[in-house]
Amino acid sequence: MKNVRTSSILPVDLNALIYMDYMAISEFFSLLGDSAKSEEFSQKAAKLKVYFLKLMIYPLDLLKPNT
Image (cartoon, rainbow, N blue to C red; front, side, top):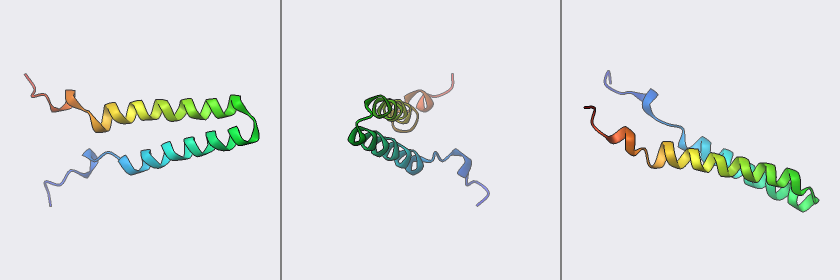
């Protein structure tokens, strides 16, 4: 167990839940007719998705050997 490095594990599930929350809040504001707030949360979700894909799904730079 000395070789287990849990600090290297990224919280994928938490980020997915935050993304879903942003989208739900965006839809909620859309239903209320507040398009500005709806767009604000839609943009937050979009930014989180980009970061999520870059850092957690496609970390190609992290997979390159050190030279």
